Length: 348
Ligand SMILES: NC(=O)c1ccc[n+]([C@@H]2O[C@H](COP(=O)([O-])OP(=O)(O)OC[C@H]3O[C@@H](n4cnc5c(N)ncnc54)[C@H](OP(=O)(O)O)[C@@H]3O)[C@@H](O)[C@H]2O)c1
Image (cartoon, rainbow, N blue to C red):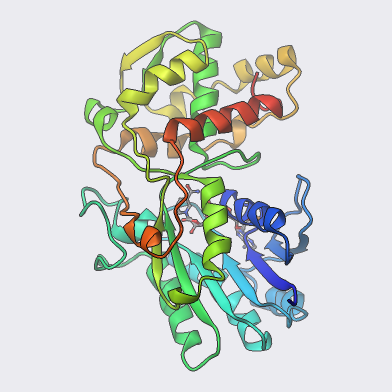
């Protein structure tokens, strides 16, 4: 069978990397990845440095991608806010909009969306959220991206899939929006400074029910769905299936990092943890760490994760019905990410 040629738009992100890793393990894929920066990790993918907000740069750098069979879109512009429509739509227009017309053998476009599709960023919403749930009032950049792709796809041989994960947990260096990294750095700072591991959000947030998505499952799901025949122009939620409440997992975090369990004590992580760079620098030197991720971390994403007082639950039934059965225990997801961070000397 002829090799498949995947273009991963946003290959340096936590999701792009999980897709590339899954393809590398599976074999049979030629991988091209797009981003402005160059990779700082080992990968077999060929990276093209391109600014997808610049239509001329995109046309010039992507003109050779005529043998593309699959496009995985997982780039993100200007932070996570759903209101960031212009930049995030431009990323789609200047990648899929350029490659699809010249790639005559294109079979499928896979668009990564997320829980924000259902309004999880706005407040309490219908849960478990199902793929068939209606949209909320815009702005929401996922809607504009999907509408652009749906229009471009009309009358073409290729089709598209929307993949909707919740907050992604996994090992990835150089990523600001990474819950595992946020917990690990925060817990180690607490240990260093001799304070208990307080939960930095309100009581209600401590107790809500969450279902997050392991980056490895997400990567394998994306490559699986890329070839799944009965999925044309469909959307799929994908989480670990295993859910959790912070109140149940927090004592285990404290145990794992050897710090005393704290109490519920809401505070702003941006100002009260984000300023602990000098303390972290000492930890890096003392333990001879290979990376210093501290200043990269989005403590605002920490505020969002621990400050949300409503459930986020995506219904996974549809992907099971279609034949993708992988699940992973949520605590295991965090443990594997922490273990890997230790092994790679990102944390002591
Ligand atoms: N992470 C999560 O927990 C999560 C959960 C659910 C849904 N999602 C959704 O999944 C999608 C991907 O998110 P992510 O967290 O993987 O994003 P991310 O880690 O921030 O990665 C974004 C990628 O886009 C590239 N990029 C940004 N601007 C670019 C530009 N102008 N030109 C070329 N490349 C550009 C970045 O590389 P350069 O900076 O080098 O250009 C990077 O490779 C988003 O739609 C997000 O909302 C994420």
